Length: 292
Length: 101
Image (tube, chains in turn orange, blue):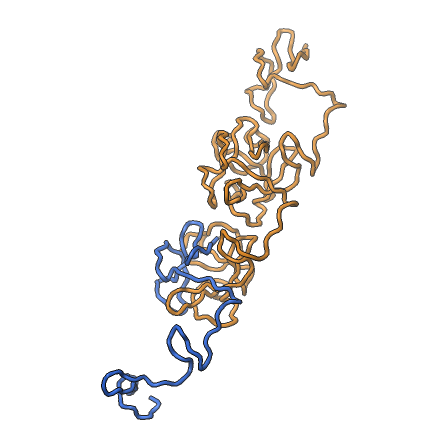
């Protein structure tokens, strides 16, 4: 027999209901244990007719500080304002906004996890929380997948570590990790809901990249004849004498993907061949906005 | 991803666009390489609507110091002031002779 006393459920031998292992994980076993007064032994009894409705799609989950299934970007508070992204379908990194849905996240009420729009996998501390590396992984709602957004930080609900830019290096492709909360700016994030995000610029200078958006340009060599770069058949890049009106010699900067695109073959961007493993530079139609 | 930084076009790893081989030839390949600051790694971004018109026939090409398609003689500054001429494929100096060579 059990009695509800204070915040504990106590049996006749004065032992209490206890979450085994003290870990707030989905499917964790509940057992009887000696009283120690800690949170794994504390319970609220909520009558079924008074159990509050869970927030629905579009509503704020106050405990987690996020709206349910309302897509958002996450921008660092560091100066670049880069977004949290993931690469190789796995590792979470920092990248400039590039319009890919790997940078779009949403809070999933049923699992209480933050998921990527890319493939609906959830944030996850690698190796079931035994490391500090952040990745996306199949949803299991383990404590190492559950974070709340509070005071500009993403805080793990079990170990209270916060999501940060590793080493405070505000650079492209830098790893995202969890770490003890030190209040650093590399641990602070702005959630930008997609439906209220500022409109993408369609013209003007992108100061970080040094190009004017969507304005066709030539890349003119400073070698003696000032030849210009030309795309040969939507593939290779060479230098050639300028020819007036030849659009294969013109390029433009695409703000969405942050790539240099061909004015003639507009769906092609400049890239280093072999995923950056070559020295050759060419145009390619599969645009990934990766470093190469 | 590439950025225009100063006179270089730089990628995220700090490497730059260059004319492969380092010399100014037509159809030379464009490659990525470690920055060395040399001219074959230097570029100007010129927007298409601001690209300067090339000099037309009869106009001076300021870079080359010559007027476009305006016939000229080339006169030696040695004492006889002979003209540059051709014998076969060889260039020689000769007294002015009104020949097209």
